[in-house]
Image (cartoon, one colour):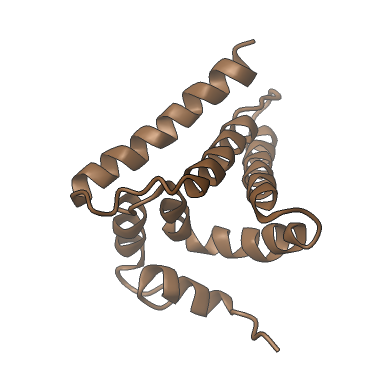
Length: 148
């Protein structure tokens, strides 16, 4: 029987410190931005949100579709939830995060499939690569889905 990972254990594994402990944000930023792959970035980014996406969207989806498609579904759902929150907070309907996150999910799958790794690079260069990738995914989503 596989033990269920608790939120506290998940966060500690991702940040190196207990949930809510001093240094949690710093560790998350350092580990995610300096990750040696785009998938690695997402393993460390916002571990509380990631925990719920993993347990409520990714794992259930993976029971019915291949893991790569479950990743794309999870990213798209996360974007949709972000859009929903923005639409509730604002007065006009908009769709920004859903296509952007979908493109990022596709890139995670592609980059993992072709083992696009940059772990051997300096931490600062890894930061630049990860932030550039996020920006490029936004531009692609904007070009394909939003501007047309």
